Amino acid sequence: MGGPPMLRGITVIALEQAVAAPLATRHLADLGARVIKVERPDGGDFARRYDTAVNGMGSHFVWLNRGKESVTLDLKHPDGVTVLTDLVARADVFLQNLAPGAADRLGFGGAALRARHPRLVTVGLSGYGAGGPFEHRRAYDMLVQSEAGLASVTGGPERPAKTGIPASDIAAGMYAFSGALAALVARERTGEGIAVDTSLFDATAEWLGYQIHHTGATGVNPPRAGLSHASIAPYDAYPTEDGAEVLIGIQNDREWARFATTFLGRPELVEDPRWATNVARVRNRRLVDALVGGRTVTLPVAGVLERLDALDIASGRLNTITDLLSHPQLSARDRWRQVETPVGPVGALLPPWDFSGVELPMGPVPALGQHTDQVLTWLGYPPARIAALRAAGAT
Image 1 (cartoon, rainbow, N blue to C red):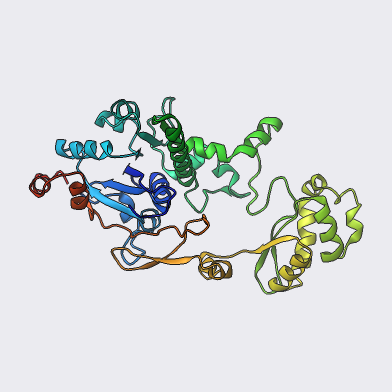
Image 2: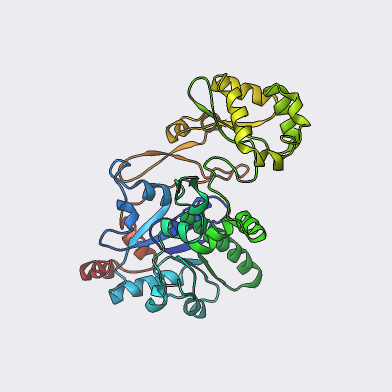
């Protein structure tokens, strides 16, 4: 089988929907694994219909499902379960994000599968993890961001906010992906598969690590700071003469000395105890921000960036997604490719790894059930049986 060498020959069966699990398996597909996505015949992964923004297709689905093969199976039909059983028998990885307990009830829990297939890696994704009082709660991204405290540190002083991307879903998907890779490496050493389980809640809590340590040590919940930073100043967006905003982040007192002396034109602030240390600047954040903003607003954004670049001070523009689409860093590094979909080609970014001498594949986004007959033929099913399964409504 073709594809890049990293995961060539690895077959993944994915019983998945929405964001977290499809993100994990899309990355496995990016690295060369064959990913067979099992969907319901009556509409498939519901992310297909989150919106119709991409020429009639859901933007989430286009993002998360390139390079996969779509097979439709009705797992309420015994023949559908039989087909899934045969697929898993040919798999290296079985990944699912069904509701808690659903995989076990179907006979596809990790322990049961590995008892039959000792080399199989099983990956389970859930909202809150196995056990505990929240095990069976619904766990949409917004809810988990709130339960795990992420929303409490996101937004401005007036009101909390969820992140503008599904951060809890993405966090869990990335840990499922890295866990699957680690389990495959371990299998090469031991010859045995491993069960990997992760949850949106645990993944989000991990991402809140420094806030957990800070609050645990001080007893004080971190304030919502918008684009600012609770522990660093100056660190925020500041106005410019031409109506834009520029982001400035001073990471240490050496940088502050350069910034205050040359950009602000206030060398006396380098030794003044009210300004000299980051701890003092955080304590006097309003004064610091007013001083910085009073300087940036006298220059156009390009002028601010040019001066800060010359001082090796971290800065950036406050861009929109439209700005990102035309960002010169992406175009200069040739990061855009065309991906085929059932509604025509769409632009997409290369996967965020660069392997020497290898361009990772960006396979087509599948139509619902597009590969069902092809995959059943790969399993050795004769045409008459494939037709019978279709007629019975199992596929």
